Length: 124
Image (cartoon, rainbow, N blue to C red; front, side, top):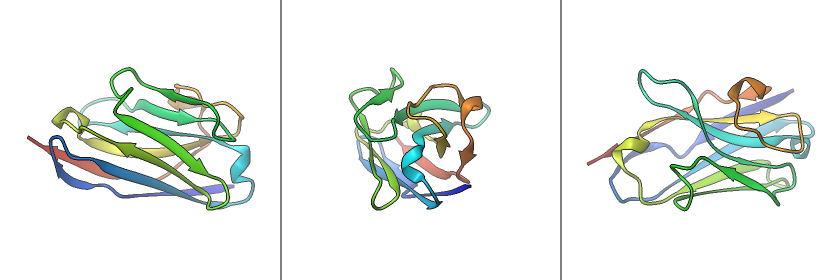
Protein backbone atom coordinates (compact mmCIF):
# COMPACT_ATOMS: atom_id res chain seq x y z
CA UNK A 1 0.00 0.00 0.00
CA UNK A 2 1.28 3.45 -0.94
CA UNK A 3 -0.25 6.79 -0.01
CA UNK A 4 0.59 9.80 -2.15
CA UNK A 5 0.25 13.50 -1.36
CA UNK A 6 1.01 16.29 -3.81
CA UNK A 7 2.19 19.77 -2.85
CA UNK A 8 3.39 22.94 -4.52
CA UNK A 9 0.36 23.96 -6.56
CA UNK A 10 -1.01 27.48 -6.63
CA UNK A 11 -1.69 30.58 -8.69
CA UNK A 12 1.10 31.84 -10.95
CA UNK A 13 1.44 34.12 -13.95
CA UNK A 14 2.23 33.09 -17.49
CA UNK A 15 5.95 32.58 -17.94
CA UNK A 16 6.52 31.67 -14.30
CA UNK A 17 7.96 28.41 -13.01
CA UNK A 18 6.55 26.05 -10.41
CA UNK A 19 7.79 22.92 -8.70
CA UNK A 20 5.38 20.21 -7.65
CA UNK A 21 6.31 17.47 -5.23
CA UNK A 22 4.74 14.12 -4.44
CA UNK A 23 5.51 12.54 -1.09
CA UNK A 24 4.83 8.85 -0.59
CA UNK A 25 4.24 6.85 2.54
CA UNK A 26 4.25 3.11 2.79
CA UNK A 27 6.73 0.47 1.89
CA UNK A 28 8.70 -0.23 -1.26
CA UNK A 29 8.45 3.20 -2.86
CA UNK A 30 11.45 2.36 -5.02
CA UNK A 31 9.48 -0.54 -6.53
CA UNK A 32 7.06 1.87 -8.23
CA UNK A 33 7.30 3.87 -11.39
CA UNK A 34 5.94 7.37 -10.75
CA UNK A 35 4.08 9.72 -13.05
CA UNK A 36 2.24 13.01 -13.12
CA UNK A 37 -1.09 13.53 -14.80
CA UNK A 38 -3.25 16.60 -15.12
CA UNK A 39 -6.93 17.23 -15.59
CA UNK A 40 -8.30 20.53 -16.80
CA UNK A 41 -11.97 21.43 -16.22
CA UNK A 42 -14.21 19.44 -18.54
CA UNK A 43 -11.37 17.34 -19.88
CA UNK A 44 -10.04 13.84 -19.32
CA UNK A 45 -7.05 13.15 -17.13
CA UNK A 46 -3.90 13.27 -19.28
CA UNK A 47 -0.39 11.97 -18.87
CA UNK A 48 2.25 14.66 -18.34
CA UNK A 49 5.50 12.99 -17.27
CA UNK A 50 6.75 9.72 -15.85
CA UNK A 51 9.93 8.29 -14.34
CA UNK A 52 10.98 4.70 -13.90
CA UNK A 53 11.76 3.04 -10.60
CA UNK A 54 15.40 4.10 -10.33
CA UNK A 55 15.15 7.46 -12.06
CA UNK A 56 17.28 6.73 -15.10
CA UNK A 57 14.48 6.87 -17.66
CA UNK A 58 11.87 9.59 -18.09
CA UNK A 59 8.85 9.98 -20.35
CA UNK A 60 7.06 13.21 -21.32
CA UNK A 61 3.95 14.30 -23.13
CA UNK A 62 4.78 16.23 -26.31
CA UNK A 63 3.21 19.47 -25.10
CA UNK A 64 5.44 19.69 -22.02
CA UNK A 65 8.69 18.27 -23.40
CA UNK A 66 11.49 20.76 -22.86
CA UNK A 67 9.50 22.75 -20.27
CA UNK A 68 8.84 20.18 -17.55
CA UNK A 69 11.36 17.95 -15.79
CA UNK A 70 10.52 15.00 -13.55
CA UNK A 71 12.85 13.57 -10.92
CA UNK A 72 12.69 11.30 -7.89
CA UNK A 73 14.56 10.75 -4.66
CA UNK A 74 13.94 7.27 -3.33
CA UNK A 75 15.73 8.05 -0.07
CA UNK A 76 13.30 10.91 0.63
CA UNK A 77 10.37 9.13 -0.96
CA UNK A 78 9.46 12.03 -3.21
CA UNK A 79 8.91 12.54 -6.90
CA UNK A 80 9.13 16.12 -8.12
CA UNK A 81 8.35 17.96 -11.28
CA UNK A 82 9.78 21.30 -12.32
CA UNK A 83 7.51 23.24 -14.65
CA UNK A 84 8.92 26.18 -16.57
CA UNK A 85 7.45 28.70 -19.00
CA UNK A 86 3.93 28.07 -17.78
CA UNK A 87 0.99 29.15 -19.94
CA UNK A 88 -2.75 29.35 -19.19
CA UNK A 89 -3.09 26.04 -21.05
CA UNK A 90 -1.20 24.41 -18.16
CA UNK A 91 -4.03 25.27 -15.76
CA UNK A 92 -5.30 22.00 -14.28
CA UNK A 93 -5.36 19.80 -11.23
CA UNK A 94 -2.11 17.85 -11.16
CA UNK A 95 -2.04 14.30 -9.83
CA UNK A 96 0.81 12.07 -8.76
CA UNK A 97 0.42 8.36 -9.49
CA UNK A 98 2.34 5.20 -8.67
CA UNK A 99 2.56 2.06 -10.78
CA UNK A 100 3.92 -1.21 -9.42
CA UNK A 101 6.33 -1.63 -12.29
CA UNK A 102 9.87 -0.62 -13.15
CA UNK A 103 8.69 1.42 -16.15
CA UNK A 104 6.28 4.35 -16.35
CA UNK A 105 3.49 4.23 -18.94
CA UNK A 106 1.12 6.86 -20.37
CA UNK A 107 -2.19 5.16 -19.64
CA UNK A 108 -3.90 6.35 -16.46
CA UNK A 109 -5.80 3.10 -16.04
CA UNK A 110 -2.54 1.23 -15.40
CA UNK A 111 -1.70 3.08 -12.21
CA UNK A 112 -2.26 1.53 -8.81
CA UNK A 113 -2.27 4.55 -6.50
CA UNK A 114 -3.19 8.21 -6.84
CA UNK A 115 -2.78 11.32 -4.79
CA UNK A 116 -5.71 13.70 -4.18
CA UNK A 117 -4.29 16.26 -6.61
CA UNK A 118 -3.01 19.82 -6.34
CA UNK A 119 -4.47 22.68 -8.41
CA UNK A 120 -2.33 24.89 -10.62
CA UNK A 121 -3.78 28.06 -12.12
CA UNK A 122 -1.80 30.09 -14.63
CA UNK A 123 -3.09 33.60 -15.30
CA UNK A 124 -2.36 35.44 -18.51
